[in-house]
Image 1 (cartoon, rainbow over the protein chains, first blue to last red):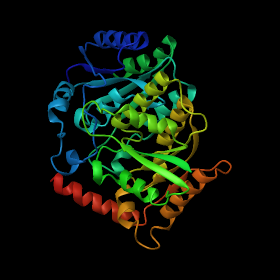
Image 2 (image 1 turned 90 degrees about the vertical axis):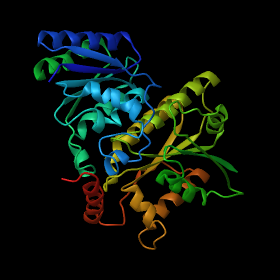
Image 3 (image 1 turned 60 degrees about the vertical axis):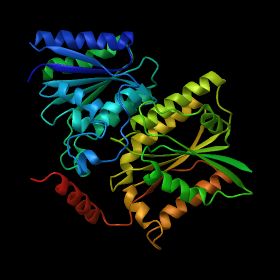
Length: 173
Length: 204
């Protein structure tokens, strides 16, 4: 296992910078290298739901040229951290284009953590975001036999909200 | 006459279950009571949508969003569409007051209640866009529902759901609850079909 990968789909904000720098700090203290990959709105074509990655050519996306470089960077990581801004409680399009390929990008053996950031998110949006990611842990098994999810989720609207995910990171690394 | 804007939130083109459901609904939204228009997305990296598509959505009496469930919520492509629509509204000075919104969510899971977080996202979107959220139709195992939608007895609940949307657009009643439609085919059979597909692709 070679460090952690931070996929930053937030487009940059003071809050996401804070979370990112704290995560890198914790990783370094634990002896892990951290690499960051910024994912913009137009960097990944949206998943079209063809299901070819499950039914026809397992493990690869029809948009292989765009998805494979991220999957290769994520391979054998101790942890993949996805920073996502919120769009009305849903992970934003940039982050969701990654999450829709979660099965291809993040392997079962890798710990996944999703941290939503958004200073203008309402209570309900922050709560929906966490429920979407964390509430169904393991439920993917019902539909996709080989997709066993272990994803933890937090949401930060203020700098003080960053304490919980950073404590979590310190505990699991 | 009520103008209805039907939005296909699937990127699967003509084979999309969402589009098939919208077409079934559109068959009930006929003149002189209704005029309906269909807009959809094109698969691609940047999802270019002409502004006039957003214009039709902003001017309609009612909007129906139909989309597949991706990882318990809206797909990246469809969220992009809604993000872009909010940007459009901001640039145009907001939505027309009183536009009603309905959603049709189809999922691969037999139990349609797995869509509840996606429905929360739709309500949150309505709050931000100034739309009047009415109710949603959540359909379990969408492809199976497509296959059985013309089969008598198996299609009653889905047909009732389309009637409910048409009636509510024409004359909105009080608060309505979301409608959850389970597939007409038993869950055990659906899971066996799914396993057969995956076993073929993932030989052990």
